[in-house]
Image (cartoon, rainbow, N blue to C red; front, side):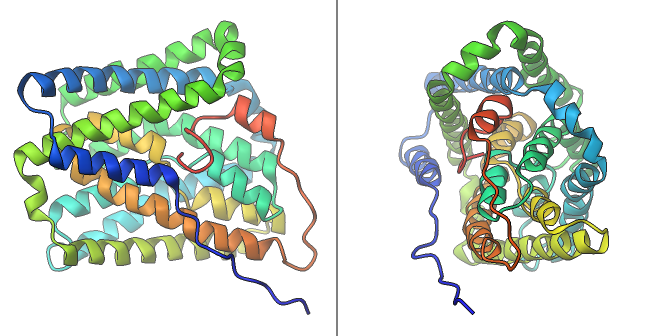
Length: 347
């Protein structure tokens, strides 16, 4: 039997390094006074632009075409918006001995955001799974997440974090839902332009998210929220996230087998059902948490890198499974039709 070789190095997302550099900049030179007001206004506009582009890219018709495989997609959605939140609620027992309340709020928010698109497709393709199903699963999750994540945050986070009120709901509608729907409505006329310039618009996406992160962490620095976080607490957070990720990976793989899914569909379920979107979660957290967003997005940033590192190893091993069939990802379709994230490694 051919021995499986380990990857030469673990994948480090370059975009995470940019995010960390942005956090460092906010720590050294936080926006204050007039600069903070300008940064806040620019961040609000950037979030609206992000969700407008998400709407313009996402083909609702092609996502709905995947309904013929509804059992798989329903299972992915259940993992993303039911099982994950239940694990987040269970982690409440770790407060305050292991996690502080602000870190727990960020962890709970992490469990509420939609799944990734591009990285799920990439790993599914690498593992020789059902790539078309992965495309549809990511599209469904993004569509549902526009409404499900804020509603779940309203019911589970309540008055915690930045507070969820009528004003928060209005900000969500104006900054997230309205731009997204506008992008969907205009997709018929601008979809081709978005597809042709996806690389340039991808840079706009990433730059916008960096601005959102800088604004959020600047507010956190000015208000002194980072004095509440110790290295020991951060280490504990990483352990808790590793446990949650392991539970979801095992549950999606063996649960898929119990539900009668074939190998290729189980691969799709494992990768689409165990991931969380950084690109969708960061701007949502900025709207939901306001000045408390810096601590709220930290668990998501850490989980994002962890899921990429672990996912790469699993996908490599799955590609050598006995009976694996060569499957190639329809890259142009994945990029042009369902590119909701900001790239393969940053969504």
